[in-house]
Length: 344
Image 1 (cartoon, rainbow, N blue to C red):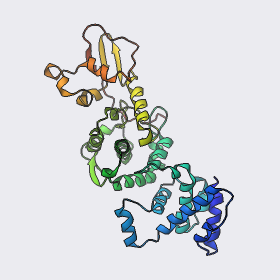
Image 2 (image 1 turned 180 degrees about the vertical axis):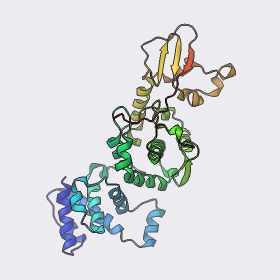
Image 3 (image 1 turned 90 degrees about the horizontal axis):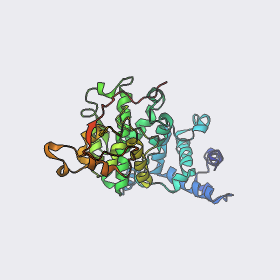
């Protein structure tokens, strides 16, 4: 649907002083036009709610749609091709125009409950390549404001009210990755996040109403019990799993995590490889061993059982080399902490 055509209706109504209600009474050639206009009118009128009525919305866990639309506008995500029209508009028309853009998209009619990760998804698609490397330079110059808008939404979200496990897990993965990118951009240019004091355990980000370190944000996700999170959260380093060039979403989270896990495990330089009777594994399996195998199954002196690890990962790891008949030795690869930046 042409967003520009819909904007003409609203511009005419506001210029003539007729008000939005007059548009809902008109007859349009397409039923979807009528539905969009009704929704936009409702969203715009919400901006005029009294403080007491806004309090009722918040008490019911709702946020006026017009506020959400304007937040997207501040992030420069809506009406990119209409920027020359938007600049001279008044604030009220800007709210309406952005809401039109949101309502005209298919996602507006089947929006996932909870936090909308559209802003984060747009940024990832713009600044992350197919190898999962990040264009920090361009992001630092162009995309900071959009990221800040998304972080504000993360800060305001009540994670305890996310209705499903997949939605909560997607929230914490996205929150971790967005916070890591924020930390890297805050100190850019850097060669490695390890050169930033307290990057993982001291610097805090406001997520879900709390001040949390990266380790604590990751811990919230790990507590949900899906070890595949370790191949989705990315610590901005070359030996980390690749940063996915899209946001994680509850309705397709299982497929996203499965793909990430297969991609990382079958990368012999970062994930796993069997070589001369030795299983070489990422340090991730050393740092988070008990997320993959219960502590009670470890051998004497807390020896990591490589055969059991391969059993846990068998649905995702397909080695061209058969494990030796005798005992398999386990060694961990060196971890490359250099920044996962695009090389240009």
